[in-house]
Length: 86
Image (cartoon, rainbow, N blue to C red; front, side, top):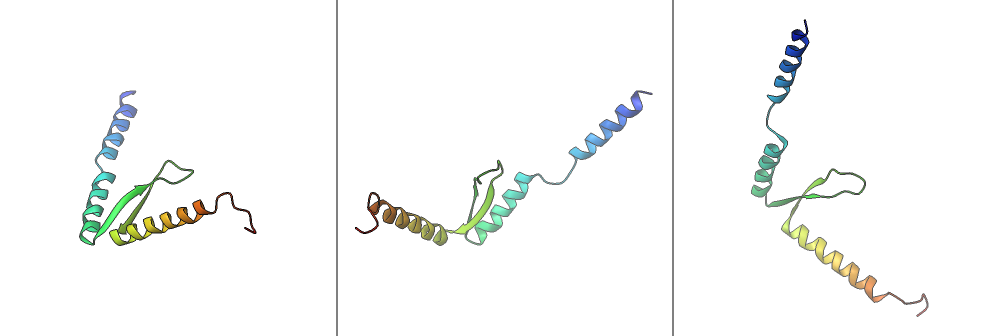
């Protein structure tokens, strides 16, 4: 009698193992499509979760965002220690 539940559990676990493509295979296929479209995909960390967010951008968008970030840091760095009226 104990063999029946055990054999059912093994059959269910074997069925779960025989599913479709894995996440890494899906990601590889998506990266190929993105590369054909001129996109660069990265996985970015998100605050408050262990899961990352996949972001795809063109090289032009990446360069523009880097320039904006540098400009923002430069303007903030120049105003350190200044008082409102000076």
